Every structure is written in structure tokens, then in C-alpha cells.
Image 1 (cartoon, rainbow, N blue to C red):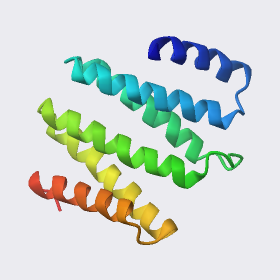
Image 2 (image 1 turned 120 degrees about the vertical axis):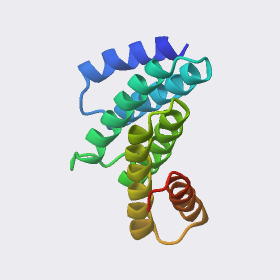
Image 3 (image 1 turned 60 degrees about the vertical axis):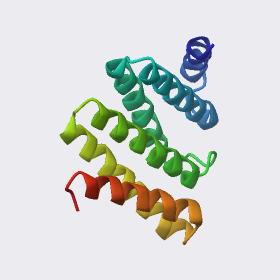
Image 4 (image 1 turned 90 degrees about the horizontal axis):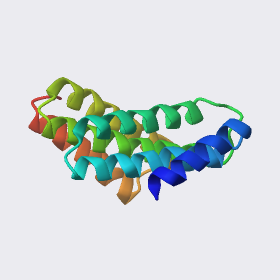
Length: 139
């Protein structure tokens, strides 16, 4: 079903490229499929789809015309997605890749903290990223 949903949304995004909500949903579905593939042991495809989703979310975030979804929603999704990609890379013994994703995860949480203030979810996300980096010997 996720694959079918992705195909339908890809066609819709081509037809309506300024439908930011559809683009956000497309990235979200790719992220979900990425996680399922990772659970099934296909780490390469998990990473490929996860990075596609990440690129699409970043493109949304960098588009000044986007009003919905809110940039903070996109940034929060990116923070979680980068954490997932970092964790997955670490499990596959791709240390440098894991560190890069986790550092990006930490950066998105920091941006959320400065934009949204001290919220429990943001604090916990930031602390998780810092802890994971510290465990890998990175400050």
C-alpha cells in the first residue's frame, strides 16, 4: 500500500508541483517505507528511500513560498528522520554516515529549540541526538 500511495503522490506532485502538503506526504510515505525495509533487513534500500525523503523535506524547508505544512513541522520531521538514518547507519557499521546524520539531527533539534522554545519533545530529541553522538565519541 505504501508503494501504491507513493506512486499516486509522485504523479500528483508532477501535476501539482506547488502542492506542498502533497510533497510533505510523499516524503513521509517514503520515510515510512524506508523504515519497513530496514526492519526487513534491506538497509541499502532503507537508506536510499530515507535520503530521498530527507532531500524532499529539505527542498520544502528551503522553499519560501511554502506556508503549509509549517516549517517547524517539516523541521521536526527532518530531525526524526535524520535520527532514524543515523541509527540505521550505525547498525550497518557506517560510522561516518551515522555521525553525519546524527549531527544533522542535533542541528534540526537546535533550530526547533530556538524557534519553538523549550518543549519536552524538542529537549528529549536534542538530548537523544547528543547522547548518541557522545556514545560514538563525538562532541
